[in-house]
Image (cartoon, rainbow, N blue to C red; front, side, top):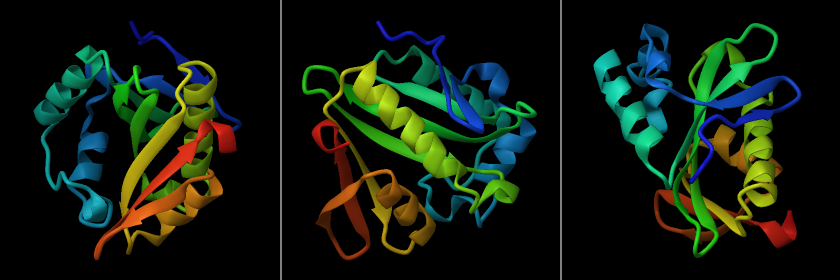
Length: 168
């Protein structure tokens, strides 16, 4: 069973598992902001929608859904998750969102990625982490490349990337 009390420390951020109490108007505003949700599947949400979304992921034994928090002020600025995690195959799919625009382009997404990748390889003993990203999402692509992800597949709109433990 996954430890849902885990906290992953970075230099400027920390990651902790989200609970229903983290569903806030601020978090909701990210999902409803056209600039923030541009590359998300979800384009609109209520706080109640977020409570349910968080609850489902908290209860899922194959999901770790973290909030990204600033160490200096405990400000919740985004989310990062592994979903699904296939423990038999030692593979997980990653997703990340930095919702607070004032924290964009400061390397915090890359720090969150690196922190979760290290945890995934060292503590969860995963061998591969993959993700999908739209080609126009240049900021995310740069962060993924800085974190060691490599493109392994592409279609007209998107890339599929992965990072392997043996290469990390």
